[in-house]
Each structure stands twice: as structure tokens, then as C-alpha cells.
Amino acid sequence: MTRRALVVTHSGRQEAVAATAEAVSELDDAGFTPVLAREDTEAEDLPSFELAVVLGGDGTILRAAELTRGTGVPLLGVNLGHVGFLAESERDDVRDSVRRLTAGDFTVERRATLDVRVIDPAGLVSTDWALNEVALEKVDRSRILEVALEVDGHPLSSFGCDGVVAATATGSTAHAFSAGGPVVWPDVDGMILVPVSAHALFARPLVVGPRSRLAIEVLDRSPADGLATCDGRRRIEVPKGSRVEVTRGDTPVLLARLTPAPFTNRLVQKFGLPVAGWRGSSR
Image (cartoon, rainbow, N blue to C red; front, side):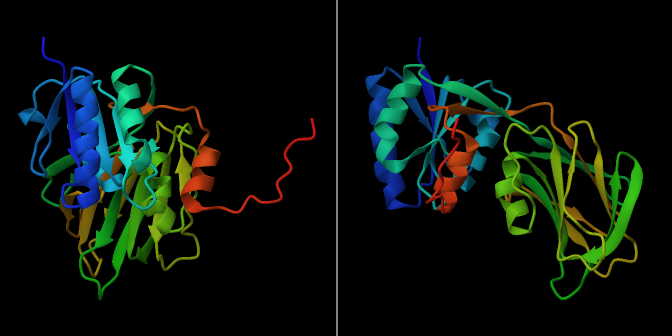
């Protein structure tokens, strides 16, 4: 029986080509047949696979999430980018990381996703999902986006803005972070809503529970139409009079973890945070 491992990489970088060669070598040695995903590969085009290795930055890992979500196969991210919050290991550890993956020496972390529905003025419904966030932004940069926010079927506020980001805890360190949202630990089961450059007295980032239903309406009076982008990859047009609904998804993304390092350590490492002088507990 053929054992296959999916390999997703950023093929445009020389470093990625070299790292991929090392990963493929380790997979071969462990008896796995590598299945290399092209940029245009769709999930339905792939044969069944047992493991998934991703070499690149968070963008490459998000692409791999599209191919692995719903398969029950965890993905192992090897960071070749700048920050790489979703990655588990770094470039120098690629051989050891793949070796441990093939040996089953890892744990699985389930990351929540968002289900996204966009209903246009004619009632046409478009659906998508996101691991990090869905970002609603204005199409015309010279104009403002007028929106109304709703939580659990109740109106909360309306204002003009550049956009609104709805994110998971995983996505709190991505687009939502750059928009001024809070950093949320991955085990917090909730959703984040962050207005972007809002013209309002009350337009603060919100954190709601996992069973909440968020909605963002682009008002008829809005000078600009909107565009919803899921994980920076998939787009849905949101013209005036449309409604974007966001709920917690039923299908998580599975990440392979090699170490039990806490999220605090990951923050310190990825952002280079100063911790000199810390003494710790005296007990």
C-alpha cells in the first residue's frame, strides 16, 4: 500500500527549493511517496495522503490549510518566512522535523475556523471560510465604508471606516493585530471583531463567545462598496446593501506540534520581545 505525504512549498524562492529537497529526501527514507502541490492545485485533485509538510511563511501554510481542512490530516509548518506564527519549526530543523512527523512523534492541535456568508441585495448567498480572518474592506480607497455591526441578532453600532476584520484567536496575530486588535491565546474559544480606522467614539475591538453570530452590513448610504477577503486569498464582492455573517466553523484546521512550548514563548520569539531582568516566581 502506497503511503503518501503532501508537500506544499513556496516554489518561487531558492531557499524553499533547497528545503523541499531535504523534506522529500526524509519522506523517501521513511517510505512515503511525496505529493507536491502546485499553486493551482485544488483539494479534489489530490490523492489521499497521511501527512502534510508545508515549507514557507504563513501565507503558504494558509494555502496548505485549504488542501488539508476536512481530511483529518494535520499539517506541519516549517517557517521560511519572516514571522511564521503558524509554523512549528524553522529552516535549520527541516530534516529532524520531517523525521519526527513520519515517526508519529507529534501531537495534534485543533485550530478553530470561521464560516462566512455574504448575502447581496438580491438575496444571492456566497459562502467561504477562514482560519485567520475575514477582512471587509472598502473597494474605493478615496471613499469611506459605512457599516452597521450586529452581535447575536442585535444591532451594536454603525460608523464609517476603512473596514472591519473578524478573526479567530489564531488570526489575532495577523491582520487583526495590525489593525489594533488584541493578542488572543489560541486556546481561547472565541471570535474577534476589529474596526479599521473607524470614525466613531465607540469602535473598539470586541471579543465574543464561540456561539455568537457576528454580522456586518454595508449600508445603502455607504459611499463605497466592500470586498470580503478570507485569509488574504479568497475574495467575495460585498456591494452596498449586502450583509456579511460570521460564525464559528464546524471544521477545524489540524496543526502538528513537535514541542509543548507555550504560546507566551512563541510571542517572545516571533516578536523579539524584551524579557531581560525577569526573575520569575519566588516559590
